[in-house]
Length: 74
Image (tube, rainbow, N blue to C red; front, side, top):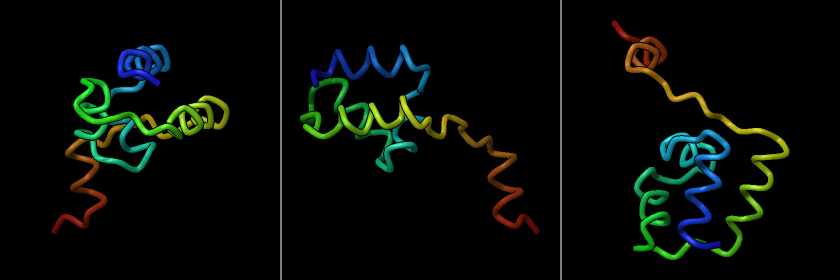
């Protein structure tokens, strides 16, 4: 998969870089580096993206308010 193909897939499937990173269990910067071509896109990524298409994935990004509430704000 090329960096451009990854970016097109992400945009077509309405994921932000952060949302895709969360769904894949990687850092947001990793997705950014893959898309910029500064880091090689792993060969297995196309399989992971296919699984996200078929099974869905977490797209919701937490707001600061939600994070504080869930983190046990005192």
